[in-house]
Image 1 (tube, rainbow, N blue to C red):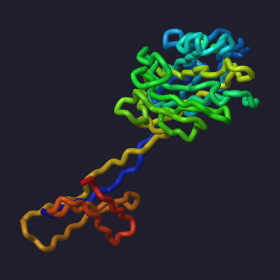
Image 2 (cartoon, rainbow, N blue to C red; image 1 turned 45 degrees about the horizontal axis):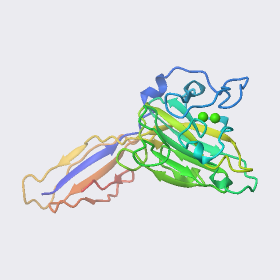
Image 3 (cartoon, rainbow, N blue to C red; image 1 turned 90 degrees about the vertical axis):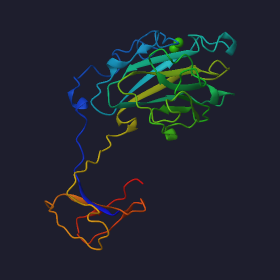
Length: 282
Ligand SMILES: [Ca+2]
Ligand SMILES: [Ca+2]
């Protein structure tokens, strides 16, 4: 069977409606700054319930970065409990639909032993299912750790180019980022690993960036819409030649899709200057 279909590709959609309807909110961390953590003057907790909620710092009117400082001054050793409040600073964001986020953590590098292990950073859901930073089953989407530069990051789109550390992905839906947050709450999770070592930083800088996303991927991707202009089915069967015509408005491209009886899809270039050809899925 041979089917020839001519389809124009319509223009890209504008930004999703939900991005245009959100009210403006207060932005940026509190001023004057009340001190660690995140200028709130209180220690961020060690789970979603005791996290510092940073949502009000973001306007959600496009890509936006807020810069924070935090500290873990009371850690005296790993034995004090890796899941303890002293070791962990957790921050929560109630995301809006159509947004993803990136968390960066930086600390001072002075040459002290083990300082490349000073902190680790993780991201995960803020609904209580994330209980710990470190492994599959902990509810974490992933973490990054170990950076001689003192710079780590995790991004919900799965882009590991932001971090200088090693990145591991854990409880991410089908197992791979990007993570489509869909307006749910999320966590930015900072963990002191070796911050307590002699000479190692016990303060960190945290940058949180929110960015418009589509399907978890950064940026508003476009959706191609098809409208059939012309169909030339295999009717009557066993023909050797068919012809037909269609009109274009001068601003629209048309794709030509040919489906041979072998079921393999092929493209068919044409001479019309404004046509585009595409190959449909097999
Ligand atoms: Ca803290
Ligand atoms: Ca804490």
